[in-house]
Image 1: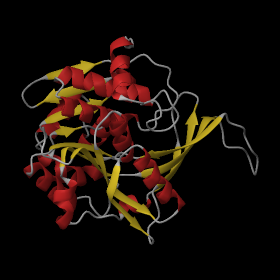
Image 2 (image 1 turned 120 degrees about the horizontal axis):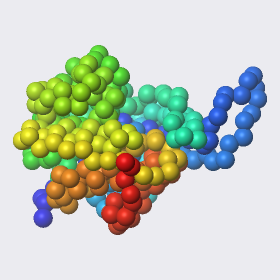
Image 3 (image 1 turned 60 degrees about the vertical axis):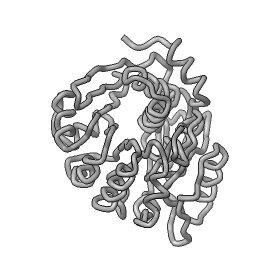
Image 4 (image 1 turned 45 degrees about the vertical axis):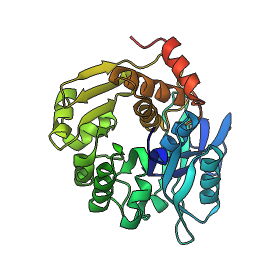
Length: 317
C-alpha cells in the first residue's frame, strides 16, 4: 500500500474543447455547412490524462487553472463527474479558461483554433509542492505552454515531488528547438519523457529514433517513451532496454488527445506494476481507444475495457 493520497497527479494544460465532426471546409462568407456531430470535452495534456486515468481506476488530482467563466465552471464540473479531485485547480475571475474550437476531419485530423488562457498564468507556489506531489505518479503535461511555470518553477516543482518519492512523467507542447530550454529545465527530474516523435525531433533537431532518445538521455531522462502515431510507440531506457510496439488496427474518428491518453494509460501501468512491454502496449491501447470517439477520452471507458481491447484487437502490420 502507498502512503500517498492519490495514485496520479496531472499538472498543467487544462482546456475546454468544442468539437465538430466531420469537418470538410470553411463556408464562404456567412454560409453554413452541416456536420453530423458536435460535442464538448475537457482536453489538454493534463486534462485528458486526468480524466482517462480516473476512468481506468486511478485516484486522481487535477492541478492547473481555469477562469471564472462558463467554460471554467464546466471544466471543473466535468472533472468532478469522473471523480477527479479539483482542490488544486485554481479558479480566478481575472483569467480566461483555455479553450479550443476543434474541427475534426473525416480522417481524424483536427485543425483547431486555440486561446491559451489560464494555462499560461497559473502558478503552483512552493508552499503547495507537497500537496501537488502527494501522488504515486506525478505528470507534468504541456511544458512549453505554461508561461508562468515553465523554466525554474517547473524544475523546482518536479525536483520536490521526485525527492518525495513520486514517479515523474513529462509531456510537452513543443514546435521547435526554441522550446528546449523549458523542457531542459525538467528533464533531470523526469523518469519517463513521453513526447510525440514529431515533438522529439523538433526539440532535438535529430531524425533517427535512437539518436533522439540519446539526446534526451544525455539531459538526464531515465526513460523515453515516444508516441509514433500510426507507427505505434518506441521505448528506450538508460539501462539499454529498447523496443517498439505497433499501433492497433482501428477506425480512427478523432485523434484529439491521443498522446495525452497514452500518458494516462502508462500511468495506470506504472501504478499496477506492469512490465515495460505490457505498459507500452496498455498505453498504446488507451491511445487507440481515445481515437475511436469524438473528443478527448470519449473512447476510454474503464480499465477492464482497455485491457480486453489490448488483448483482442489486432495490430497494424
